[in-house]
Length: 103
Image 1 (spheres, helix red, strand yellow):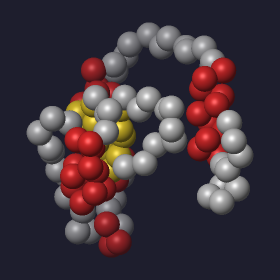
Image 2: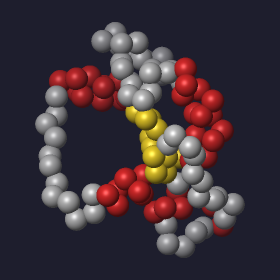
Image 3: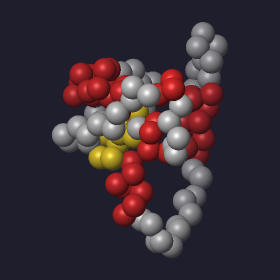
Image 4: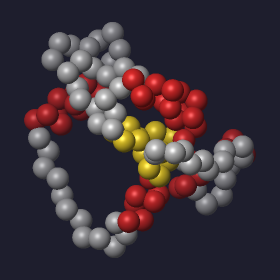
């Protein structure tokens, strides 16, 4: 798992299938402190044929997105302030491979 140098990643949010096949084996070698997994089926009513083989999975040591969201159901929203550091992170995400500028 690659992160831009100097960026301190504390959490990872990924699809369960990606966690199972890639992230689970690599996250231990990173500073990631928590993992939230989600499944494409969590947000669908009718499952299209392309996703017919998908199954909901749970992994020890991870948090489930739907479980987390249900804890805040009906809670009053608090808005976050956009900081300069967040702006730097968004520029990193928008940078195209091979066209990354020095930050």
